[in-house]
Amino acid sequence: MKREVPLIITIVTGVVIILTFVIPHSPFGTLQDRLYNWFIIVSGFTTLLGLDSLIQYHLKKIRDRRKDSGYSIVLLLSFFITFALGLYSWIKFRSPLVPISPTGWIYNYMLLPLQGTMFAILAFFITSAAYRAFRIKSLESTLLLLTACLVMLARVPAGNWIWTQIAHLIGAVFHSVDGSALAQAPVLSEPTNWVLSVPQMAAKRGITFGISLGYIAMSIRIILGIERTYLSS
Amino acid sequence: MKLLRWLASLDRRVIYALVLIVTIIPLIWKSNPPIEVSPEVQMAYSSLDKVPAGGIVMFSIDYDGASEAELQPMLMAMLRHCFSRNVRVIMTAQWPLGMPLGQMALDSAAAEYHKVYGRDFINVGYRPGGNALMVGLGKSGFRQYFLRDFRGTPIDSAPFMRTVHNYGQIDRLVGLEAGASGDAWVQYAGAQFGLRIVLGVAGVMATSMYPYLDAKQIEGLVGGLRGAAEYEMLINHPHRGVWGMNSQSYVHVLIVILVILGNLTFYFEQRAKKRGPGGRGQGTGAGEQGPSEPQTERPA
Image 1 (spheres, rainbow over the protein chains, first blue to last red):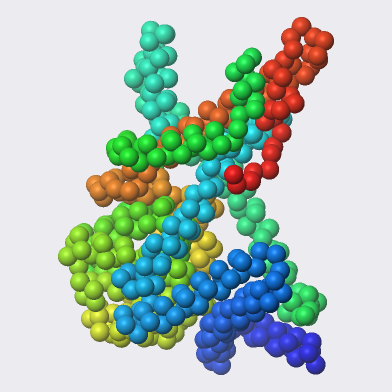
Image 2: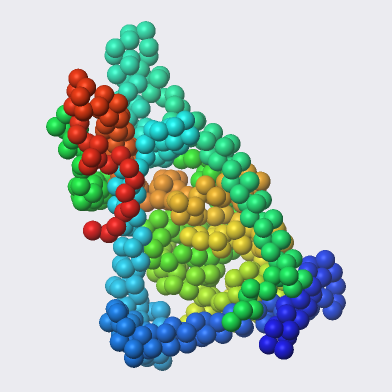
């Protein structure tokens, strides 16, 4: 029964949801609204479930004195302090997210800088990785490298400045070439727009189609009860 | 050869230091570089510009602190555009941690244009549900999900909200995206209910949104810090986006220079290897210690 009941619920719900898309009339139309509301309520409870799992996992880690359990202590302390301050802020400021509330302070001066820092570190790694790994080794890697450099330069004002200097230099060396006119030529922007709107978009569409087909296939497998890995405990 | 050998064994901390320098110096010396407006940002601007005074634009804050540097200037520019034209704003969030960022931007832009909470704008806050919420707002209406704003005040206490029932009364949706919510807005709110959508997205995912723009499923696309800078230029209010473009410019140029240097080193290293140890030249000596093979990056 532990497997059959969830399977039946999944099959019935999946079929009903599909029917509500093609039959918008009563009772299916209103049933769709009801099911969506249930989904929103259940998704709210999944947050609680996640919190429970998180706390249980780290409490066990601390109890067992496993390696790096100090981080678990920091995590749990942070969680409970933030939770308590959130309740206090809710009572005093009617929202835990008012900037002058304690949680507002935590958000502005701890969470935002930490999140920003984590994301900003990528710039350092990407630059270092580009220096070490971006090599002309084959036709494909050459194309990738040239395209990347073109798009990187075209998307920033410095790219236009560099091209303007090059155009003026060409104009100075070859008197038959008008440097100013050459500087106005869309040497960077036009090829970049073409890259973005033709090969990039074609590849992106292909990927989207592939993902969507896989998504549909997996959904059908789940609804028909062929795919049952989500039931395993 | 000494230079090549040095380049080949360049410590990654030197690269990190270079990135730090070229990022920080332009931020200290604030200047307004010439910024060319791209067609997709012009489309986004024109779309919002067509919303009549008294019309309603709904903003969805679907990002958090990680993408704040790119998307917050975008949000500020678009809010300034709306408030300068007396367009009313409803703010919501698909990412709960993005909601305070939205409120901060609302407070700041509203103070600049003397807009009043409840009369000119409202923040209805975050609700869970994602795709189901998007469909529900179109079918069942706002009051099914948002009876109160983020402070707990009934949304009907804002006079303009009394006429808002579903997407039919929303002139535009501006989705500011750092994840998959942008696709969901297009697929569920745009495709099913005809909601007119403008997207502002983090630079790293801007290319993913071009098919929607090409298919006219969105009316404009503002991508990354560059998009924010372009939008700031369009509203004649250069601010964080434009200032940040200097840093981004120099970092891009630095990456291109490093890639060229890395390839030069690689070329000479390969040439030295072909000649062999007994050849005419001894090579750069970089083969044993060089950066030619990708190395796993680890935080220093």
